[in-house]
Image (cartoon, rainbow, N blue to C red):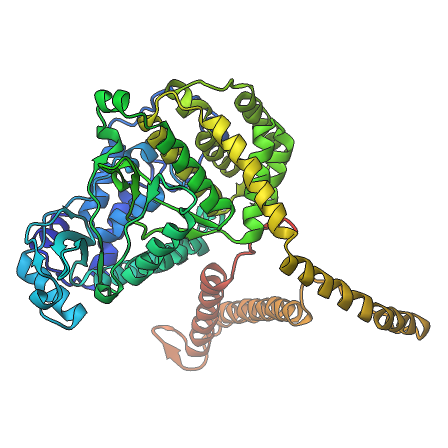
Length: 576
């Protein structure tokens, strides 16, 4: 796997044949087929104490290294897998969270050409100065410092040449592999890798359009207006295109690099609290989750604010899913384990082997331990009793018990865990549980106030008016059908065409089997007849009948093995 990094160091995309690339991906998957990656979790592993170190003998680090060697697509896959505790065991999650996305920079003439092609003007016409040395380099882009004509300092994010072509080719190969695994293996039917690849494809391709990231910057800045402690760099729309993003330059100190002296002289607890409250608003009020709020994307500015950037990966949470997540966290804070389990079940899909009784018991015990945790535990208890850890454990136990949870649940858990890490870096004594509990009450009050707004009340009144207007006519129609004995009840199930198709297939197989047996039996009896023409020393008619029967028999066997579709596993979604 040497050619991936070499190609990235040169800044060039080396085309690779589809079959060759697919073979390389398959070799990687086969190498880790018995390592527990992508296989989900058993219940004992899901409920094990996190303090017990797994016996993996360095394989998670090697797994991450092999992912990085496969190129930028798989670096992003590793980052996405770090948010899926239902698919990847904890020891591999820990290694994926440490994945580095630093690569050698692309030569400046290549970057200059990319910027000029995107903007349609020469570089010195668009920017007064443009630093040739990048501020940072990642697998898909690199960032350069620049100055506009009016003296405004900006950061220019430039997409690496041919990144989109490489990613599309890799995603096509992955989709083909995932579809085959889903159709031919029990694990695939349980985990639905094809659906995950499809969602990942949409997210990644959207992230490659920097206009979307610019919109996210604008939108997050508006949403964070109630929190003056938070700042988001503003995009420069005139110099932003699909593959080039120009935004305000943010300087500051990473939250993990803040010295104890500065923390003592400049209290930072207000930044930590504003960050947690702002992100809770983003999730439960505005329905958006920033999927990557790690310390590298957060800087404490010289004027004492917290700057948030790199908003390419933002997931949308539908309103109904938002309500389930909010009720789940409320029930968890109050220690109502059964309601937490019920909300998780209503959000997910029950598989054929779903063990509801054990799931309810395990979740009840988990929530009881969380609710019994006293406030003010500090950073020492963050990773065992925090809100993020609770949500991730909910996902792990659900997968182990046969419940497929929506990706929003694990993404929320990963985001909360990252936020808790950042908040404790800013304020080691911060009581995250108290802030989450208080702000959930605030969010609920805001949602109730919004639901009682004149616009919402008018909409509800219109629906009620429509119901009252149509009710007499519909009731009259039902009574007329009953009076005329024309009421019909349709039960969903197998359609008639499907049943007839299945019966016809069975009948054809039986008939073909009878004909085949008759041909072989007739040929065996005619082998004893010496009269007539001979072929290879055997009666010609008997040999021809035998060959026809053998060919039919082989065709039936191959058709049964490779053409017959297996019955889809039973999956039950909760009523919406």
